[in-house]
Image (cartoon, rainbow, N blue to C red; front, side, top):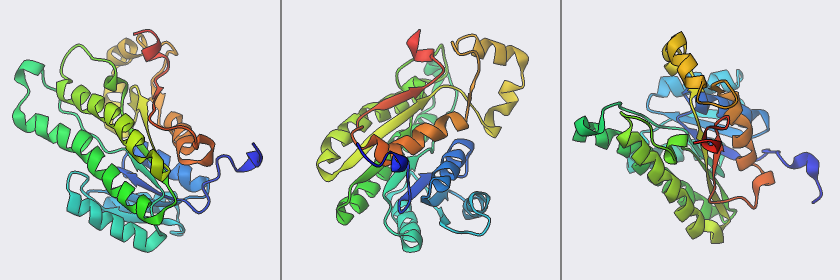
Length: 259
């Protein structure tokens, strides 16, 4: 292979980061922008999208915020229209949107189940479908990246029935979509992290008992940081992963190596 210096070059790519207003999505969006990509940041509130875009690029270059509800096909279509009008066709989709409602399996409410499944599973499909329509129309292929979880492959003691079901479903959906869309040059992959430090979970990590119990199950002896996911996301977005598809790559400090 020649041109090693451009293996991770994202110049000319339009990376849409769904859930880019959050800790994980925001880190991935910033990393892709740093490697030359144009970046659209989507979320349910336009002001938060705009703030995230401003953090990525103070002068607003190569970045735009677009309001989007990832559970609604019409909202996804509208978000794509805004982002593509500003930055050109989406060539990379990163789906970092997700939610969890903790309830024991015997007590899971139908409303709770639907809320988790609508965003984590149905939303993942609707986003993939919208991206594929755009990529196929352009005829240049592309990359679709979903943030899944170690819980796509592992259960947990209690409280996560809807979450593990949604992430497990997304994990096998990745394989199906990769199989169907390979002929169009579209790659579909997942990134499966363990517990990642973000502002939303700081209150748990600041509890010494919780933290110590958590890291005792992680062979590398620490929780993940958002930066730990940025590199693998850039890899999956870039030419260096041009022969990688249908994979759910675990970034978990060794959790799945010993469970």
